[in-house]
Amino acid sequence: QVEMVESGGGSVQPGGSLRLTCTWSNGIWGGHSVGWFRKAPGKAREGVAAITRADKIEYADSVKGRFTISRDNPNNIAYLQMDSLNFEDTGMYYCAAQSVSNYYGMLSPQRYSDWGQGTQVTVTS
Image 1 (cartoon, rainbow, N blue to C red):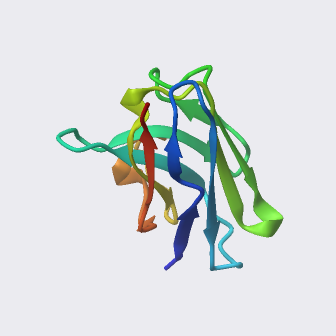
Image 2: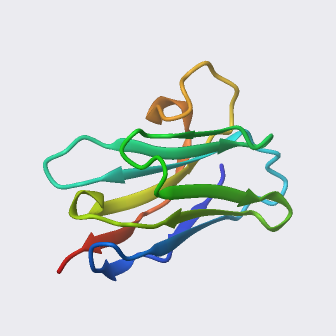
């Protein structure tokens, strides 16, 4: 099992930026994909961005051009740079690790087996 830990959330005004960080504890995890998801009150969990070990990347349409995902494999870190934030970006953000090969899409929660506790992002004026 891989322990995922998110950080970097907070409150920001519309148009602002935040960078979320995800670290994982299992240094021997060769890993497949790392995904970022968010959950807003009253809404379903949404895949935001994901990146494979080979740096193939996928974004949700709602964040394309505003969010950037990256990963630093030697240091067990993944980032989600969020720019031009708006009210609809408010929610709890989770990172997740895919530990087993499967055929689910990169932004599908079923692809991922290990989840962090989340970090809250609030966009407020």
